[in-house]
Amino acid sequence: MASPTVDIHTHIYPSSYIRLLSARSSTPYIYAPADPAECPRLIILPTDDSPSLPPSSRGRPIDGTYTSAAAKVAFMDQHGISASVLSLANPWLDWLDPSSGDPAAVARDINDDLNAVCALHPGRLWCFATLPLSARPESIVAEIRRVKGLPFVRGVIVGTSGVGDGLDDARMDPLWEALEQEGLPVFVHPHYGLPSEVFGPRREESGHVLPLSLGFPLETTIAFFRMYLAGVFSRFGGLKVLLAHAGGAVPFLAGRVQSCVRHERSSLPALARAGGERESVWNVLDKNVWLDGVVYSAAGLRAATEAVGKDKVLWGTDHPFFPPVDGKGEGEWESVRTNVDAVREAFRDDENGARGVLGMNAIRLLGLKLGPGEGGTLE
Ligand code: 5CU
Image (cartoon, rainbow, N blue to C red):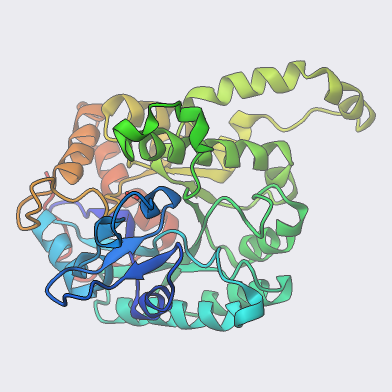
């Protein structure tokens, strides 16, 4: 039997979330054109809502690939994907204003919705829950405890803003504690990118290329190293984080961060007073970090594997983003093929390593029990 293929990075907007965005008119929102023959538009990134464009051209068309479990499973069948771990796509609930509703109740609806979607395809679909990060800390922790009991939830997804000031904020500690206690891995995913000015005065000429290819992964990179510097992984030694897009530049820059930490004059006296050494970046990568394989190159995958170990890199697609550029979804998606080929090339002489990245590592990390016959056929 072929080895199973598991997609760890695949998004969906369940109906409860679509209702929320459809009721809004500022980012994030869904624009419904007056002509019902036209596709509604999903406007989630700040750069999506440019006043220079008519609303009917802003963002991207949102079709069933973003919202429907049947479309997800059709995509999986088309690509030989045995199982998928669904997550709500950005910007999650980060933007919810607690003064105009109860974020915890909204998160409960979305997580129940996600769990129900997975229940339609047992043995093929699981999910990462979303957290009501603008709710009171007790409510966020209560939702972490509650989703642990939902049969298809295998972790949570968070953006990099945390409860407002980033994932290194001490106010995140009760959340890390609960996630560590419940054994729920945390999928850290970007949304905010970098300030647009860093991309220079001609940035508009290349559209979303710089924010998506560099802004997103560098956002994740910075979020992770801020967590490291704040000692999150020393305080919560059992915390498991899965970093999106192979951790961005984390594998490449870990050594430099480690060196700068060793030489940072301002922290040397404090460390000496504390009688010790800061835990090394490499130790944290070894014990706390998993990376997805959504990096589109063998070179990137090799770096990811070097940084965290070949049993801790997990393949994914980023579906429904990056669809075929010809607008036809029926054939194989080039973005999927590129990520499969990267595994094949990086693990040319290591069939077991390839099997691990393509599926077995996810099965092990998340305790997935695939249905009979779900061997997968991705080659
Ligand atoms: O293309 C995009 O905008 C995105 C996005 O917003 N989120 C994501 O996960 N991938 C691509």
